[in-house]
Every structure is written in structure tokens, then in C-alpha cells.
Amino acid sequence: MEMSLVSAKKSRFPLSLPHSLRETVRRLAEKDGVSDNQWIAIAVAQKVALALAEEGYMEERRTRGKPSRLVERASKMSGMAAEEKADNGSDNGLRVAEF
Image (cartoon, rainbow, N blue to C red; front, side, top):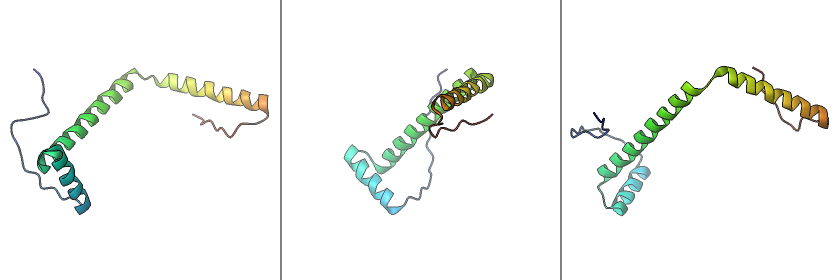
């Protein structure tokens, strides 16, 4: 069963916008040939889709991530920075976080 973000049911949602933003919405909606309400609904739907996609991406990355690899890589980078400092006599302004 496919889940839809759009439902046939609608609800009212009073929305207060700063005057300048309201005027911009009015102008952009007119340019797109849609009502102000439809333009705002589309904008909210786009933001929700983006947030859901990001949420899914972050969850997928979280399940693939391994904390031990992060510490291992950080240690390796710390060692590389120390070697560079010894080679150049300078740390080039780089600072490595300690874990």
C-alpha cells in the first residue's frame, strides 16, 4: 500500500506572515498563475518532502556509520598533522581535535 503525503481531506490553518513576505507570496503566486493558498501549500509540501528525504538520508547514514572508524580516522589525521609539523617545523595553523 503506497503512502501519500496528500490527503483528500483539507483543514484550515490560520497563518500570520510578515507583510513583506505576504506581498512576495502574492507576487510569486500571481506569476505562477495559482492562488496564494495553493502557492503556500506547494511551498510547504516541497519543504516537507525535503525534510523527509534528509531524515531518511541521515537515518541511512547513521545505520552505516561505525564510531570506531571515526576514532580511527581522527587518530590517523592527528598523526598526519604531527608528522607534517615535524617535517615543516610548522603546523600550518591546523588544529586537530582530540577524542
